[in-house]
Image (cartoon, rainbow over the protein chains, first blue to last red):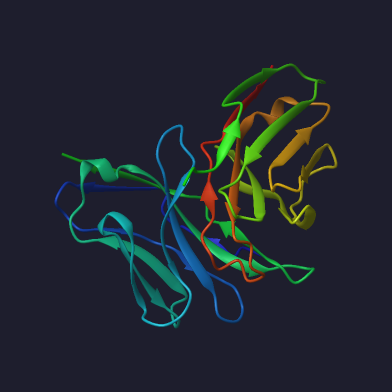
Length: 116
Length: 115
């Protein structure tokens, strides 16, 4: 069963404009949700997470994400995009598997291209 | 604090050979997870080790194996390499609580090319 979906392969935005990268999830119970970013030839870097509490989560580099339980979404946002934000973005959810231990399941990734 | 270190950064092997990849986690982290990243399949979970025990395993054939040492360093091994094993192999460490709600910290990966 798919746990997290990123419906867009690529998002294009002009520098200075707001950006949104979409993520929906499908896990039972209270989800633990994460956003990561990957630059070329590098590993993933943690941006932010939602565990509980305020639905608007603020993270690194000016990014924020809004948790929406009714829509099962956790979209990543930034008010003003920079060319340096161009990268591959992954949404992830922590799921419980047999044995009782969670593991992180990643979406397919969304490539963000910010044009000058 | 030093980050997650993976060695080597690049590897070229031929079909049928075996390979061992190494990962040194952030000091104090007891959990090490391994992921395979390919353009077609994205990020696929391989396995997770915590205090030298495998806690979780993904859907990979038995040719993929791993282990963790008492200092939390981890290795993964792939035997009888196939062309489809060409990928970026990422290691990530964390405190490793049961709910996995603390962030994973990733290394820069080992790029394996099988010819």
